[in-house]
Amino acid sequence: MNSDNDIVKTREIRFCHLHPDTNQARNALLLLSYADGIIDIQFIDELCISISYDIRVITLEALEGVLVRLGYHLDNSLIYKMKRALYAYTENTQRANLDNLELHSNNTTKIFIKRYANHQHNCRDKRPEHWRKYL
Image (tube, rainbow, N blue to C red; front, side, top):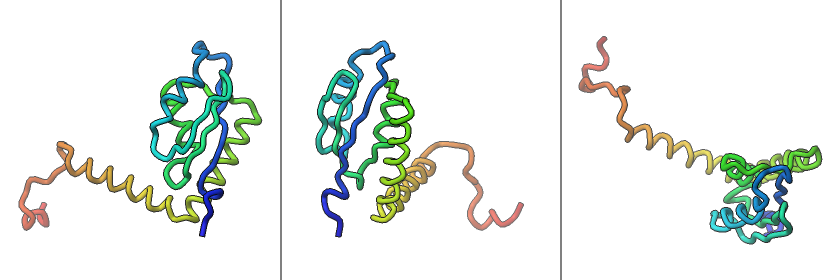
């Protein structure tokens, strides 16, 4: 059985100092504080926040991906790139061992299938079922 130390991770997210927005860390703290899986989030300094999260729900890679898509600039120095790669690998491996990765991807697949089934598009065959065997 897994202990809380294995499931709850505490990491730092560091932002680039060259970004015009000098409040990236504070804004990211406010944005991420309501996300699912976040246990604790703290402001360290103007360029860094500390975040604790449950890897069964969310990973650091997902959190940073959301920030990047929203226009935040992360510190991309070599040491932080290496840390990100190591954290992504270990968290994804741990989630796979917990069988959450398969469950999560299955839920995502179901969401896309449901969306496709309900979406109005021209890919539906209007013929009755018994006529579909014939061209």
